[in-house]
Amino acid sequence: MKIQILGTGCPKCKKLAENTEAAATGLGIEFELEKVTEIDEILEFGVMMTPALAVDGEVKVTGRVPSVDDIKAMLA
Image (cartoon, rainbow, N blue to C red; front, side, top):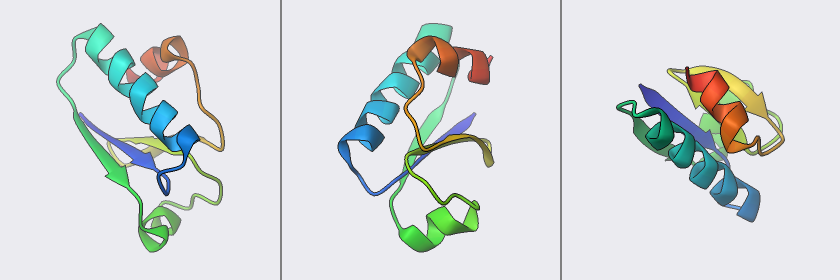
């Protein structure tokens, strides 16, 4: 599973990355975590607010940091 954190590296982006890694590890799934920081690449996803979370190329959430449990539900 490819998980992408879309954001410029702000504190919310870092928290989203932490929560996402905790969720994926907690579920015991194999994953690749990629941080997309280039504005042009983020816009290609159609994302206008960061941070955002994409799973296998599909944007799951934008503009907020979901809880670890919420992310687990998105990944399951």
